[in-house]
Length: 144
Image: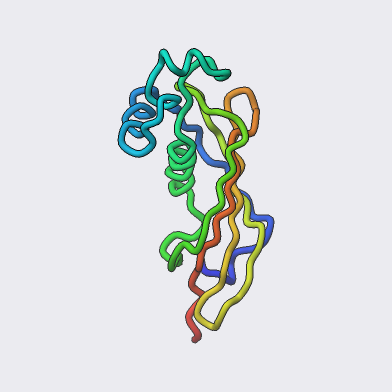
């Protein structure tokens, strides 16, 4: 979608994603190998009472589902930034659903604009588990 076609307030629902325990452990072992993510006995002794998913893994699982419905498509030039906030822990077998909303647009030049995309992800209990604000650079429609 070209920059000119994107409007503040546009929203997409993101398909649910299940946080599978084995994938969670594989990700944690590779990228975030702390006991809270990898050692079940250790995790049982924490206030969480069980393993929690690495925050980045939870976000990327939601992001992968977002990309299936993606606002920008081939007109995306680049990502500029992202700010993730983890509100509540995500556990194995949690089902995350999310929505993505365009929260800001700003034309940068005749060739592109900056679009702010906000994502809110909830678990199967309706609790917000993470939020994200991503800025993306999107192509403008070519001059005729």
